[in-house]
Amino acid sequence: MGEIKKTVTLMDIEFINISRYSLLKKIVYPAIEENKKCFIVTANPEVVIETRDDPDFKAIVQSADYVVADGIGVVNASKFKGTPLKERVTGVDIMYDLLQYANDYKKRVFFLGASELVNKDVVKIVERDFPGVVIAGRRDGYFNRFDEEVSKLVLDSNPDIVFVALGAKRQEGWIYHNIESFDKGIFIGVGGSFDVLSGHIKRAPEIWIKFQLEWLYRLLKEPNRLKRDMKVLEFMLLHTPGIKWIMKKLGFSKTKSRSSRDGIR
Ligand code: UDP
Image 1 (cartoon, rainbow, N blue to C red):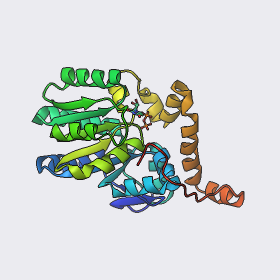
Image 2: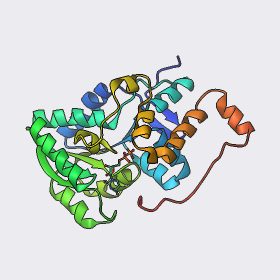
Image 3: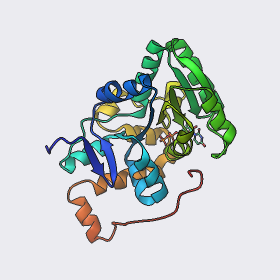
Image 4: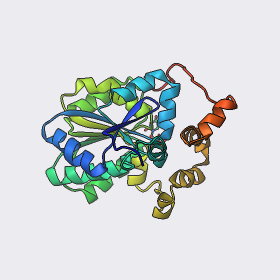
């Protein structure tokens, strides 16, 4: 096993090398108490591959205060590189911890994203399970990305924490374009976590997670993810010793540059 570093860089993305516990205790909770602003990206292999393919998205991810490794593929890649990341830090787990913290310290939380039904159910469940959380506001995720009413709704709610569940890319784009207007707040893209928290989608059972097969579980449940999972596979192949060399020899290695996809910037 290689040297332990404070950050680990994979495909130009700098991951903070910290456990979830330390990230929250040493960085995120103090930031909330000091009314600071903080942009956290939870990046899985698919996100990393997207940053390679989309320079605008790459700049957004690189602008974050912290990028955490939300995927066992990223952690494994760091090990193969000889600069191991401590652990996988998922958006859904951070969300649960932040909800517990907001519950204990009566913090204001805004829930932005997912369908109207899921968004409503998330708030219901939070009200039931985390009664100390102050619901600053909520809004479903189906709006024009430049909708100023949505930005104003979030801003006027004076949140301590903003969970943005618009799916990868879209959510980071929203945060990037809006964070300047805020004086404080933790902004984190949490992908499909509202679907999980509200019970509309089940997270993979522990055994699948243990055997690093959460991606396969999701693929079986949502076969339309296949195209996205090809990116995960590509990331794995690129970071498995020997395979990268073979792919290069076979002419599969690519350095793409294409403009930002619609819906992001
Ligand atoms: N979503 C949204 N607005 C959109 C597109 C998607 O709010 O315009 C929501 C969608 O309802 C789901 C989440 O974003 O709750 C995307 O989840 P996904 O599993 O795709 O997240 P990822 O895998 O990108 O983290």
